[in-house]
Length: 344
Image (cartoon, rainbow, N blue to C red; front, side):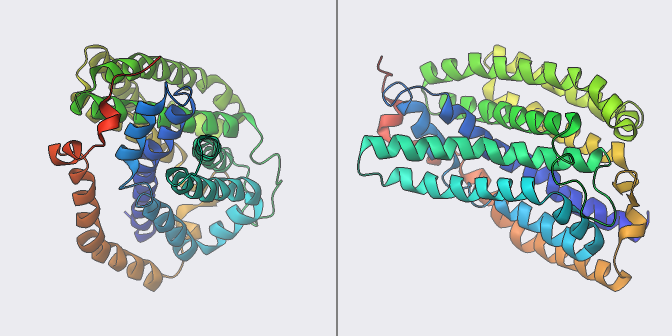
């Protein structure tokens, strides 16, 4: 494997991790948005706050990792992406800012009206960000980002592949968040809330899976290079994602909520990796190869050295943080009102 491929793999590992951890984080906004009124949705919103509270900012470390890697290892590609996809990237980052600010403001609202406003902004922004990041991925994968940059700033991301990418990003995020929130509710002893989430997670998972299958035909027509890769070398990963998704639905249906988290992660990871495999060896599909876009060899080696240092300094701390939120001690600290019977 060429050094540029090793660096690309390291960079895309960050994409997979952001898709998983950031996706589950953003997906909570869907459940917040659809939780109902102030009284009916209070228990679910408390659960969401309690579940994502310790990690909602930590997940952005992967986005920073991806952007810095792309900028340093593939500077011309970074410039091409940013000059062409300035609009969706700006909207995605705006969503991150609005989401973070309103998540904090909601906790300190002086009135119920303020809490509702900040909550709606938090939930809406949670859907905006994955959608626009999905359109960016679709634009790159469909060959709409020219190597020299400054491509069509509207048509590059308003097209079938990009819109499907944004829709699937929102759907998979909501599904992943639903699986994790259902498990959290069950672990905290709130069987009623777990049952409420169980049914809706099954629906979201089924709809997202159907959209993913239906998307193959328009993608093959709109992005032939990507479509050929998805049905070629990436097909085993697509099949793995489908099988893991079905297994997740079966486990959720059978109320094996804790066990369902593993195949849910596999399903999302496999589809994201499958996208990367499908467009390899292109970094900008039909425009620039990975090997041709890479920077100086010394720069690539330096980046890999930084990754090695981060692996032994940052990753253990993040792993401990995520593990801690899944322990019984964390559940025992859950606010009492999160486990109160739901009122009509």
